Image (cartoon, rainbow, N blue to C red; front, side, top):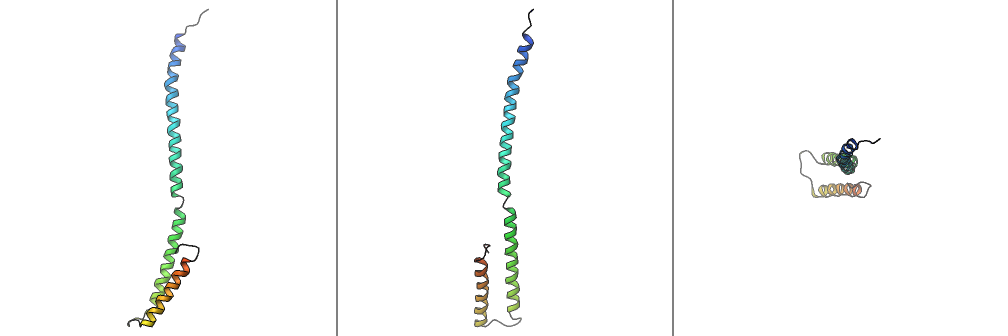
Length: 103
C-alpha cells in the first residue's frame, strides 16, 4: 500500500513562507519592544524635572515677596539699602545653590 506524496508536498511548501513571515513578525515585535523601552527611559526623569521646576517657582516667589516688602512705595532706594538688599538676595541665592537642589 502506497501513500500519495502530493498532499504532503503542498503542505511543506506553505511552511516556508509561514516561517519567514513569523520570523519577520517576531523581529518587528522585538524592535517595537526596544523602542518602547528607550522611550520609557527618556520620559522617566519628567517627575524629577517637575519637582525642580516647583522648587524654582517657590524660590522665585520668595524673591518677589522679599523685593516687594523691602522696596519703598514712592521713594528711590538709597545706595546703602540697595547694597544691603543685593547682599541679602545674593545670600539667598548662595544658600539655595549650596543646598541639595540646583537652584
